[in-house]
Length: 251
Image 1 (cartoon, rainbow, N blue to C red):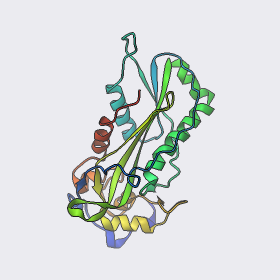
Image 2: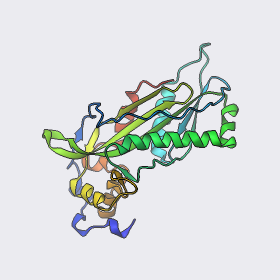
Image 3: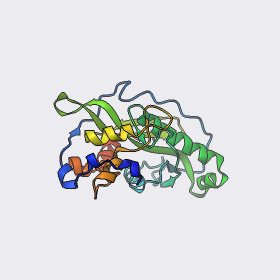
Image 4: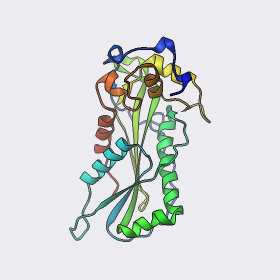
């Protein structure tokens, strides 16, 4: 925790913030809420069998868990009817959009993580050896990037900062890509404004400090990654799972 994250005017308690925010629907797909995703580089990964490699470009254990669970539960079978196996591979990669993405930086960060992770896989002989070792014929990557949409319409039509989760899935073997945005949670305004005031990292929407870090620094007992549970009585990971389940995975 950095000293600058602490602001005496924001000191509070979990009980004071409990259920003070609201859950809002996923945004309608527009060029503002879901900017066009750039094309991914093409990687000529060789085929070694019927199985699927799922590249997960984060060290976040909760994101890895929900992605692995969702993909495993929807695995296709091969043409011969035999079971296809899923091999998850964690390849931590940078989002290149700062610690707290705002607006279009969220989808951009998800794209960057996948592109960077696939490049790492392509450049590493040790990583590529996994393909043959596990009989991989299809290489896929899935990324999750939570971001704050500024000026989103909250309950009652009031413009509010809203935290959404952007889910991006790319099949590097076929080139197909799909995405989804989770339902959102309004962000406690004072904590959002203070996080915003702490500056950016390379772009106006590349926040240097997350709203969750500000909440944790000023509210003892708050979870910086899942503050949603306190303020809106919903787990961030349940919202993400819901969004993933709504995807048509591009096997």
